[in-house]
Length: 387
Ligand code: NAD
Ligand code: MG
Image (cartoon, rainbow, N blue to C red; front, side, top):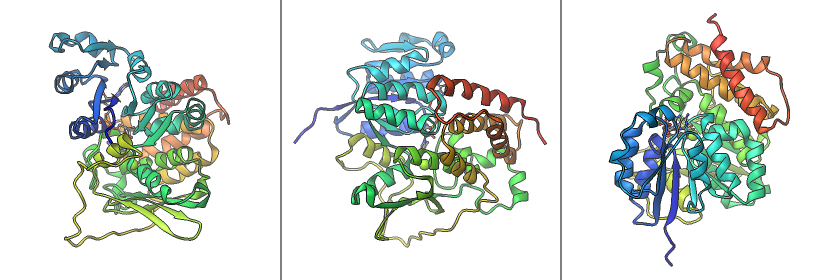
C-alpha cells in the first residue's frame, strides 16, 4: 500500500536536529516532503536548504537577520515569512501534516503550541516545551487530537518499548545517560572545566546548548521532567542509569519485572525517522549496530553529589507548576553566561537552584504567567554574582 507523501514543517531546520531531519527526508524516496523550513539567524544555510528541498515556505524568525539577508537567491514559488509569528503561521498551515519542533530552548514553545492547537502530529525534539508547559501542552493535545511523538532518543526508546505492554502494566522507566565528558571528573576537576571541554561530548554530536546540558547532566534533569509530562508518569516511576556507550537509549520495566530496551547507534536520524513515519517503520538511514564486533554495554548508578542537576530535575518533576519554567529559563541563561566566560561550569546548577528557591511558586500557572516567569528567571541569572 502506498501513502501520500507526508508534508513536514521543520521549526529550526538549520540546527543539528533540523539538518538530521532533512537527511531523513532526503532518503525517504519521496514519502516525506519538506513543506516549510525555519531558521533564526543562519539565513545562508536556510537559503541553501531551500534550494535543495524546494519547500513552499521559508521562515526567518530573527527580524534583524531577515532584513539584512539577500532574498533574491530564493527560488520562485517559495514564500518567505519573517519574525517569530512566522513559526506559528507555518505550524498552523493546513498543508502541514507533521511539525518537527527542533528549535532550541523555550523559544520553541510558541510554534509547538500553535501546532498542538491546530491538532497536528508533532515530532518533538524541543524538550524545553515540555519542561516549561508540560501539563498545559498535554491537556491541549487531548482537546485538539494533536499527537506528540518524541524525538529525544530516550523518550523515543521509552515510547517504542511501551508498546510491548499496556499502559497500566508499566512499573517504571529507566532513562539512560551517557554521563557526558566529565563522568569521571572529581569535584576539583569539575571546577576547572572550560567551555571547550564542555563542548566535547564523548558519544553524541549535538547543538551547543544541549551539549553543555549533557556535561552538567541538566539535560537528564530536563528529560526526567519531559518524561513525567509526556508519559504521565509519577516522578518515582522515573529512574536514571549511566550508560557510557549510548547504545541502549532507555528502558521500560513492566509490573512482572520484564525490562524492555531500545538499542541503536548514537544517531538522531533513527528517532527522527521513527517520529516521522510512526506507526510505520521504513528502511533506516542511521548506521546500524554491528554485532560482528565485540560490544560492551555498561550501566552504573549516577553520582547525585557531583551532578546536583539530577536532584533538581527530580524535585521539579515532583513540584510541577511554575518550577519547570524557572528551572529551564535559569539554565538557558546560566549556560549562555558560562559560554560567554562569565560563570564557572560549577556555578550553572547552583544558580538555577537559588533562583528556583526564590521564585513565587504557583501550582497551576497560565501560559501568560509562564512567559513572565521565563523573563524574570533570565534577569535573575544576569544579576547572579559569582561566589
Ligand atoms: P541547535 O542549536 O543545533 O539548533 C537550534 C535551531 O533553533 C536552529 O535552527 C536555530 O536557527 C533555531 N533557533 C535558535 N534560537 C531561536 C529562536 N530564538 N527562535 C527561533 N528559532 C531559533 O540545537 P539542536 O541541538 O538541534 O537542538 C534542538 C532541540 O532538540 C533542543 O530542544 C534540544 O534539546 C533537542 N534535542 C537535540 C538533540 C540533538 O542531538 N541535537 C537530541 C535530543 C533533543
Ligand atoms: Mg536525549
